[in-house]
Amino acid sequence: MSLLLLNSMLLLYFISFLFFISKLLLKGNNDIMETCKHKGKIMKPFVEIEYKLMINEDLYHRLLEDYPLKTTKQVNHYFDTIPSLKEKGLAMRIRVIHDDYIFTLKEKLDVGHNEYEFKLHEFNFNDVRIQELFQHFQINDPKYLGFLVTYRSELEMKEGILCVDFNQYNGMEDYELEYELKDSHNESMEEFLEILDKYQLNFHENAPSKIKRFMHSLKLK
Image 1 (tube, rainbow, N blue to C red):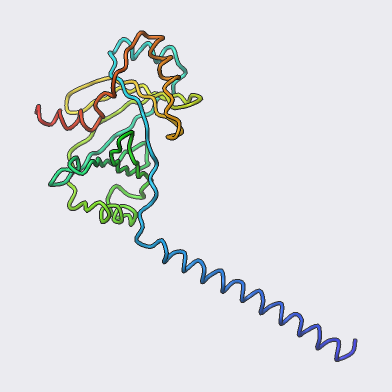
Image 2 (cartoon, rainbow, N blue to C red):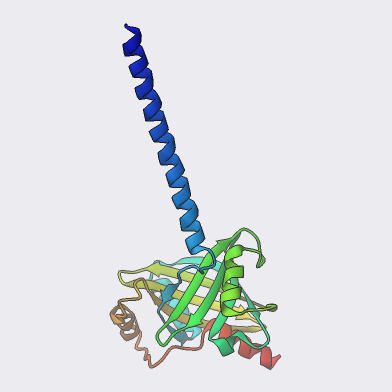
């Protein structure tokens, strides 16, 4: 192999190497710019639309017998501020399922809620995503209110998720039927209405949420 040919090959390898390095540097700069562009913005919420109905104990057990439901224990830990988050149309909790901690902040909409939800490594508010939400919604100094235990029996259906709940909180117990839509752009109640018709139930408006019932129970103590 001639010296000229060898030098030409080495030059080509060197140019290819420089091109590869330049692509890596360009990607790194783009990643940095993308990070800076989104810095300070809160995460995009999920729009939650659900239908909720209070039921009695007999119907609760009938539903458990009639549907192949999977039951899981959940513990909702509720927090509030002064002035109350309710005045801002907000509600906040950390839900514990087994060893998982799930933070949820709900913002009331005309229909449904904006739901900001994600898993935590620890049971506290140190996560940067929580701090960004606190800053965005001007949430300061949250106080712990207490907890509500739910034994949730759940079934995924075509258009939504059927939930049959048994709840315990502050010495009280209640039962509820929930149907949460998978797609917030589809507000169909057809599946839910079929269930109501099967058990001769009427639905006019959503029952009070768990946190509302929990807050009301605090006033009764």
